[in-house]
Amino acid sequence: MKKFMMSVTVMAVLLLVAGSHVIAAEITNVDVISGPFGTGSYVLSSALEELSKTHHPWLRINASETPGLVFNTKKLNKEPELKKNMFMSYTVGINYLATHGLKPFDQTYPSALLLANYNLGAVWLASLNSKIQNQKDLDGKKIAIGRGTQILWAIEPELIIRHGWGMSDKIKIQYVGTKPAARALLDGLVDAGIIGGYADPIRGQLKASPQTIELLASGKKLYHVSWGKSAVQKVIDKGMPIAHLKLDVNTIEGQDKPLEVFCDPIAWCAYPEFDEKLAYEVVKMIIAQVDKFKDFHALGNLMSPQSLVYGWDEKRIHPGALRAYKEAGIIK
Image (cartoon, rainbow, N blue to C red; front, side, top):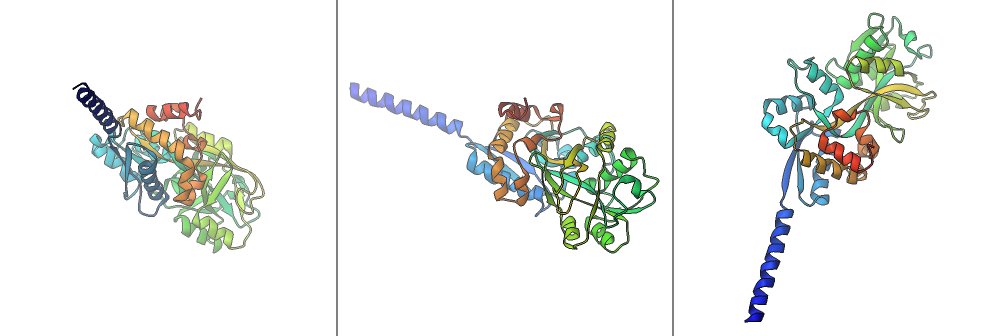
């Protein structure tokens, strides 16, 4: 009888322990909306989904394609109940336009908060004319930049020309798109064009964008024009929270002088309503697995623990994410 009672007790304890493990391992699903199929935002968000399946005991991130990052803003604010369990691909530039109700938005939206950067887009101007090497040389000249709706490739550069340089009435800006800008420069239709790529500011690396690669492949000498640190700061002071970035010599092929440019952090962001514990778990996993994103996309090579927060003030980081960064020693 004693043996029987002991066996029953042991079985009960085992069942309780097993039950506790089941509860501890209960799956929690979180959604991330990314960008169009094939973009870095889409691929790296899909990578985040895969990493959650293989490297977290209970968190499962489900990534979905969307028409774009502006759409993400509108969706989460149109369906606010999603904010508790959904985050998105986003940029500081889009956040600025959204919070100020500027095009392509027709109303103001609340500010989102950082979870983690996954790209840092950096752009500047280049010319094939050896007499164009600084902003003063562009007085009266024609330049080609991105389409008017492209934030990194058009809106932010135009803000630097207007507020940073004070030359919006002295430079003829053509809003043509990134690839047409490169073609216009090669064909001699403009004096300078927008180029750039995606940067790791911590290790001083940059992956050139497609139209920049096209220009480099032409074999023609490119003369790079810095925005200038003070010009970038003037735009920041106006409220657009881009970040200053210095590119050392030969960061890009043939670059024979340092460049003072700007970058726009491209990131996973959430609204304040996003569950703090989930934000902590998502970011803790990203920090731990940051070196694995390169297995999914070349842009993953530009990700590092320190680059995850580059360009963001602490007050603009989600509280759960901030706790993870402080625990990891990335933010003191």
